[in-house]
Image (cartoon, rainbow, N blue to C red):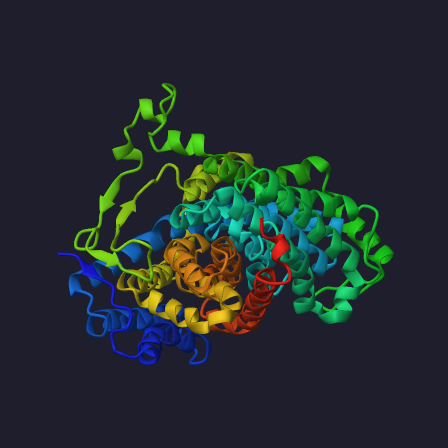
Length: 565
């Protein structure tokens, strides 16, 4: 028997909204203000969500429990798998001494921590977001920043702030593609409009990062590098999104930004070298010191140290290509593929979640259909998952770095043991997200924002922001709220393309505060039990950037309507 969502269970939209907010308030409140460890806060939030779903909304008990188990499984794979794989590669680099060589090579470009954050967190992070998505950019960028000498808390926060503007085009354009399927709008039109909104923020985010680190005076000292980093990415983002499509926007933009900034640093350096350790020197003196420390690192040694990360970059990019993904899932028609050896049931088995699949239905106004049945299918695509691509890169790195296979096995076990608590936390976070999704309490929150009438263009991005904060994924937020955004736009006489695209472009600002990303950042930097401190640091930035996106969308619904394709 199908159970349909109830969007006003208490007969008062205000009361229903306040009750639907409780799991999120419980999770974030305990994490940020009560000082609870992330795993305890996540479990408390999950229990609250289950209680509301069962006793207030009326979701069947077995369906609610099944939703929680479905979310926990998704948290462990593919998300947890990416984190374990990325940190394994990082630990291999530390073991072989390659990380120290990498650190010196980056310092050779510039010893200034402001510039290093642009190179690693923004440019390289954007490439990783485009190629892999999920937690890979935050995990790898935060770990590399820590290795470069950044304080762990600062590294975590900077990696989260940087992982915003590229997110809508992440994982080879998956969020945009998903939004087009859910809303029935043209994929290229959504891509083009996103490419006319996010470039403004691609210019702003690098400057925002530097201000977060060193204040306005610190920004003045490196504004040319900030401009080169942000503008090169923004120009490519606009051009690729408008004239090519969403798939390779971040991949190409990240590479162009990284190369442009690296080349620029060969002819320009900041007058003062700003570092977290308080050491400041004139650029010429810094260059001399850097040369003394780096003179023993030959180009061959530097290439040796960076090659595992080249393996990673190539692997995650190839793993994301549709033809290879189809082959690795046994869906390719080509004879010389995995499909010829292993059937899809082996390399990418799918399991209908008992008691949940086909049991829950969305109803208007959350959907344009009279009744939209929610599917609940778990895919264990172990071979085509991005984490497997990273593992492949790590296995190539073992002999390359000169590490014995026995020692690599020990590193793997130590790495897995160290991440066990984080994996449990992520599983609980995703269980909470899936319960709110299948119970419809997320839609209750979304419907509250739709009551803003003429101001709705401002609040449409905030709905996407809320969706990403709840689910940890711009793709999931688009799938969850895409139809609601279109229905609301049509009811209010607004452009559905503008409002639906705002769900994705506004959603990216919520990426830095979703619990999953915060746990990933804390894990990558080794600051366990400081998730609350990270959340308190990044929340104001997230909300401010979401409000700025809301302002842009509101202007595009009026005086800047000529920007909408």
